[in-house]
Amino acid sequence: TFVHFGGPPNILIDGRPHLGTDKLVPLLRNFRHHLRELGVAIRFNTRVDDFIVEGGQVKGVVVSDSNLQPGSVDQKLSFDAVVLAVGHSARDTYSMLLRHNVDVTPKNFSVGLRIEHPQELINNIQYSELAAEVQKGRGRIPVADYKVVKSIGEGDVKNDIEQVDQNRSCYSFCMCPGGQVVLTSTNPLELCVNGMSFSRRASKWANSALVVTVSSHDFEPFQSHGSLAGVEFQREYERRAAMMGGGNFVVPAQCVTDFISNKLSVTTLPPSSYRLGVRPSKLHELFPPYITEALQQSIMMIDKEV
Image 1 (cartoon, helix red, strand yellow):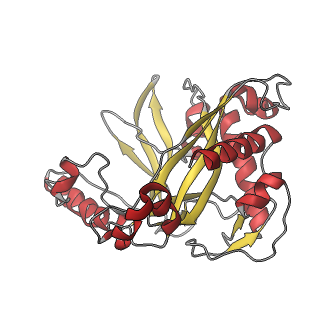
Image 2 (spheres, helix red, strand yellow):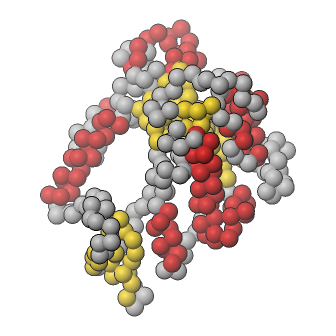
Image 3 (cartoon, rainbow, N blue to C red):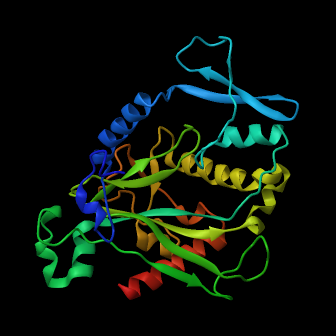
């Protein structure tokens, strides 16, 4: 489908196909034009605020338009069926579902940090003397990436909530060779970041999420929020990160060696791909100890491996 709408044919055969954010934008435009030709109406700047429920059945939705003046009357849209295809940040939709007594089941997820390295370092680790052939994505060899998974076994990390030892997985996710760290927050009081790469992967940085699994046991301090305890768990640490950054979506950051050593020895940081600024911070104080220690131990295990 991607190729049909203008994507590069090589993604059909590549082991790790990559479009690039710059290539995705025109693809989305082509998707949108195609859907409109089929009679689909697409409404931007429109938020679903509530269901229309009659006789125990969903008959439509109540929406508000951000282009209208504050206080404008919400619009009611009636439909034969309503399908919610929401992302993981649709927290207002989760709350709305609970108001209508919809069964909501929490699931485990992972939290952590993004780790950034010079791309040249990753090339040298993965390719050795062939690293010179990468040439910022234009050479004979593609920009190097990695994928790491570590299990922090019983007795390695103490969970200060459960007061018992347990296994936790720590793994890399969304590794972006030749990429950049980008903001994903939807609330200025909360801070969350992700990574992306353009199609050429020509940036001098590589970055990856390094995350630790968490479960309902970890959400017990937020159990007053019921099914949304995990969501409140996320909010808590996103708010802490925003405070550590000092506002304006500045990201708290720390050298890896300092993070492992539980100290902050530098007041200036090396350059970062993140465009809104970084602030030296004690990231080892951001998460509960069981998450921090799992991250620290896995980083040391990965360091020995590479």
